[in-house]
Image (cartoon, rainbow, N blue to C red; front, side, top):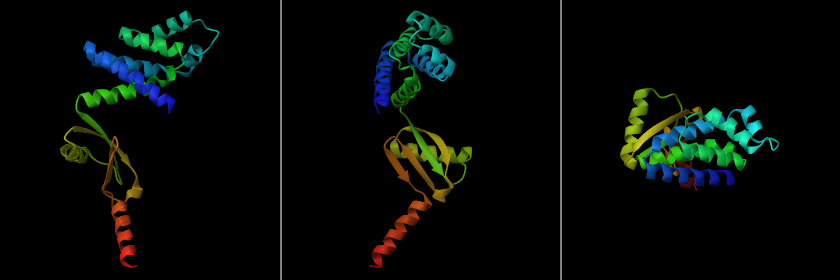
Length: 179
C-alpha cells in the first residue's frame, strides 16, 4: 500500500505542475520513459548500488533518459536518491489516470466470454459512454467462465451483465421461492 500511495502523491504533484505549466504531454512522455528505464534490471542494480556515488548514478540516468522534461528528470533523480525508481511505472500509470480524468476520458476493463471485434468494442464504448456521460476507452479481456454478456469495471463502478451473474440471480430467486 505505501508504494501505491507514494506513487499517487508523486503523480498528483507532477500532474499539477504539468497542468500549471501547460506541459501535460511532455510530462506524460517523460514519465513513461522513466518507467521504461526502471524495467532494465542491470541499470536498476547499478542505481541501487550503495557503493556507486550519486553523481555516477545521475550520469547513468541522464544518459539513459536523454532529452526529457527537465523537472521530470529532477523527479527521476529524486526517486533514485530515495531508492524509489521502481515505483516510476506506478507514477506513470497514476499520471495517465489523472490526465484521462482531466480530458473527460474513463477507461473500462470489459470482460467477455469471447473476443470482441472492433465494431462490438465501439458499440460497448458508446453505450457505456452514454451511461456515465464520458468518453470510454475499452480494455478488452476474455474469460469464458462468464458464459456470455459482459462485465465492465470503470474505477469503482461495476456493471455485471454476464449470463453467469443472471443465472446466479435466478438460482437465488428459485431457492427463495422454494422455501
